[in-house]
Length: 372
Image (cartoon, rainbow, N blue to C red; front, side):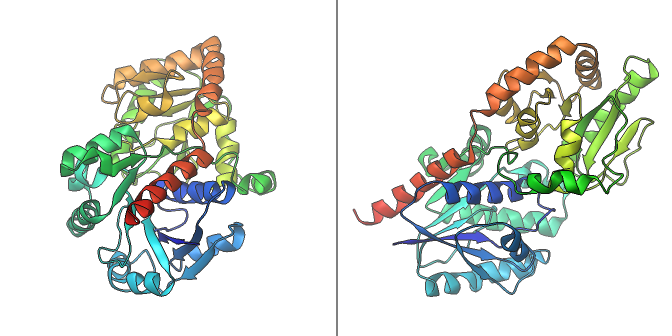
């Protein structure tokens, strides 16, 4: 039986956001679907605890490297991981987080979620941007296949690197709501925290320090509605709030929440607003829909591809347009009910089992071509 190596050296739990969800979701899917492969997962020190709480029937190798030290991780990934892979009998290496070893004894697949380091490179430290430009670019050129999570990101990659579109496969992400074991203990977790007690009624947005999440413009739009007394809802920001952000009255920031607590807050919301103007996928939209929460989101990047006809859209660069969408959802309960039903239907298009099947098809294509 051939062995597939899964490179998770990038994974920093509770920090890397959507790429962590992707890793967990793909592992859940690979656990569930029938496969002719064995899997061996290469983990860093931070992510090793994940396999103590989650049940995955895969072999693991915990590497003596910390992902928070990027230079250390890049060095290990390029010069030590290839030796481990060969020693472990790996027939194909799949790197799940943008970068991949460039010198392997076997074929490689790399998942490139988006090109945000190009779209917003001027907003990150120069050394990090240059490292990503080099390692991601080289990985795209040398890997046998690139997996990405949306048609939007596929077109971005093809345009930026002028590669054959047949080298890029799209495997959509999916909500983790029905997979996460955290849900089983969520009720017990939220009873002892004040951070999940929110003033009703409220709506939510997922916050981040990244400028493209557009949180400052969302707050400006919300503040204009509060000043005109056009809305009674509070705004709850889930996640890390940018340090230089001016928080208005009736805006509550939860800070980082465990998954169980996050789902509790999300399910209590009347609606979700997602104002980001650049996303490789936009997973919080689907997680909101899976929880029965109506969605308003940007008409930008991959978001229409993900939300389909189950959201109302706005221009993320227009404060007035964002405010209009918020006011519409806050006042129109019939609209919220309709979007809730559409959301449940839309989310059925996405499944981690299906993602796993498409990923396995990529492995099949590469490995079978070696025998031709």
